[in-house]
Every structure is written in structure tokens, then in C-alpha cells.
Image (cartoon, rainbow, N blue to C red; front, top):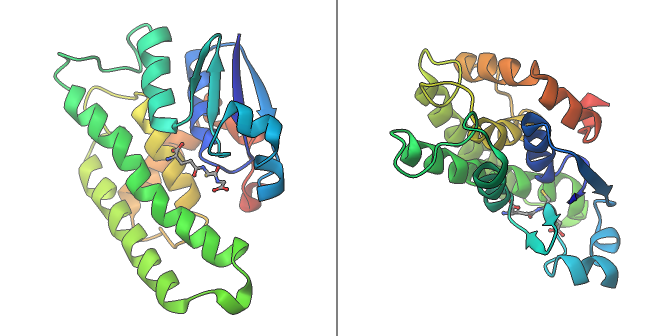
Length: 208
Ligand SMILES: N[C@@H](CCC(=O)N[C@@H](CS)C(=O)NCC(=O)O)C(=O)O
């Protein structure tokens, strides 16, 4: 039995979405997105950094969303979502899988600045810098898509769930209206039933 530890709106949404794309049965444990909720002795015994996602599959435990994506694809995919070693799109698949975090770290920094850090300790400079860097990271995706529907020329794959979540988060934090190709890609991803199912279990403020 697969168990996924999750917080609404967090990077664990990537794993929820991918589990739905793969059509796998799993138990979802939703924790409060707070220090108190994530640093309990019980959860730290499962996930020592006290963050989400954490996936448990039998004896196996994985605590990075990118590694969870790769593990699930290597273990459970029937060839649709994975691009294994030797595949012509393998390197691009790996690149975008990790690039998803390049985007998300700027989003996470903005979430810290706008929500978790006390108002008197917030920095306008950090917020401007992180917004600019987030937009630049999104522009690269906008250009990379070109005329493609998804990030890889052959079509939808697991990396669209990794990058798609990062765009989902970013869309709450910066204005992406000028990035038309990226906007159309995000709309395409949002229309996927597995995205919708993960959203129901993971609303951001704007989705409530
Ligand atoms: N690179 C990690 C990042 C995990 C991470 O930082 N998750 C956030 C939620 S988006 C978290 O659990 N934050 C709680 C905290 O930092 O206390 C991954 O992609 O899994």
C-alpha cells in the first residue's frame, strides 16, 4: 500500500497529481501546513526533515518530490509518463524534472515573505528580486514550449506534473498574463482529470 504525506497547496500536490495520472491506489495523509503540524515526533519519525511530500511504499520511504516522481515512473508506469535511460528524450525529461524545483524555490521564498514571515520582518527587496527571478524561470518554459502542447515533443509526461505544479503555485504569486504560451499550457494541464482530482485535495487560496 502506498501512503503519501501531504499538505494542501504544497509541493506534495505534484505527487498526488502523478499518483492519479498513474491510476494508483493510495492513502493520503493530509497534515497541517505549519511547524506544529509537520514537526511532531510521529511525523519526524517518518520524514526526518518534517516536510512534504513523503511517500511510503512498503518498506521504502522517499522524501523529495523529484525522486518520488522518478521512483513512481520507474516502478509503476507502463511507458506513458516516463522517459527511461536510452530514450531520446531522457535528458530533457530529467532536466525539466529538476527545473521544476528551480521554479518552485522562488515561489516558496515568496510564500515565506508574504505569509509565514511576520510583516515587520518582510523584505521588499527580497520580494522584488524573487518575483523577477520567478518570472524569468517561467519565461524559459514559455519559450521552450514553442508550438508544443507539453514540455516534451512526444507529448504529456510525468515532468508536466512537476513543472505544472510550479506554474500552479507561481500563478498565485506573480502575474503570468503576458506569458501566453505558458498560460495555454497551464490551462491544458488544469483540464486534466488527474490535476482536478489533486486540486480537490490541495486547494490554494484562489481555488477555494
Ligand atoms: N525539494 C523538496 C522541497 C520540500 C519542501 O520544502 N516542502 C515544503 C512544502 S512546499 C514543506 O514541507 N515546508 C515545510 C517547512 O519547510 O517547514 C521537494 O520537492 O520535495
